[in-house]
Image 1 (cartoon, helix red, strand yellow):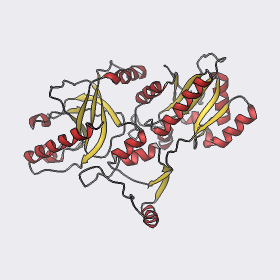
Image 2: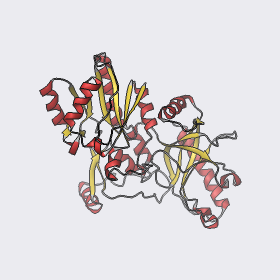
Image 3: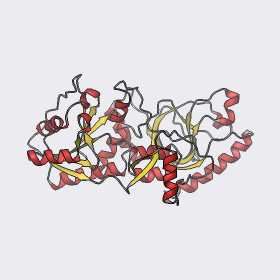
Image 4: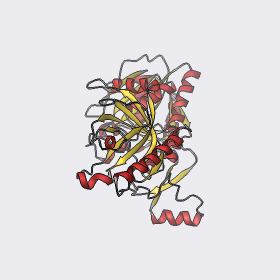
Length: 390
């Protein structure tokens, strides 16, 4: 796979790479945050059409996420805490699907102001696009005026390229509260859908009470909402894979070691959306040590090599250690993974992926360290049961 980074200038113009314009290319574009099943349907269609027509396959990947850029008026913070996955993970998934070329475009407000007609003209004239693959509700260009119907009309009028529309919505729509915030479940075990089995009247009442808005079932917004409420199984089902975050293992308080549960502690710089506080069953994957000042291609290589890397079942904690916070005075949010391994794991300085397979329980304050240890033993057993089925 080839990875090309394109940085628009202050006017939003791009210096396009020199490519073989005689070869037809099938292209799609977007942020592809999380690479959920809707995204996968679009990517698979690109690969399918490229093979059918003996054409190249390419993705134009916007980074940072357009929604993130627009929400901050172009003055984006360094970290996008709402991004489900890192760009490296998305590119690696595209490569596994068979994509040959990824153009990573540094998304900016100036770039967003280009009309969709101008932009598509650039793709056909500069990159040799002959087929554009889009999801059913895609829209691009200034004011998002380039919706599927407008682009279809343009394709028919010019005859320069074809538009192929993929149904990437999944099983209809769901409703999520308009201004929701993460809410830790109060009970043990995977939370249920609060609307499961509800009547139409009950659903309407719930939607009105929470000022709920409709979103596609297969959408990054829905996945974030589910993760923010501990509903890991439902989120993983939409993603088509286990949700994960990555980070570097650092030295912690070593409190876990003192009670017989040594953990791999992730540093503050975590890539991927953190689910709500709680204890989870999942996995830890060792990527090894990243090169100093690793660039995008280095990070993609780490993910690529992780396919055959060591992988251990793990009980994962996200939270502020309520049992010990009063004594230590430390309330910062931390991510810890206790690997179910008989061997001592020396992972300090390694980049790891923490994958989430199920919600076990909320973070609670125990009366003593002994009570905590007894509960951790139960969490480990449940983790073994959940991961043994995967």
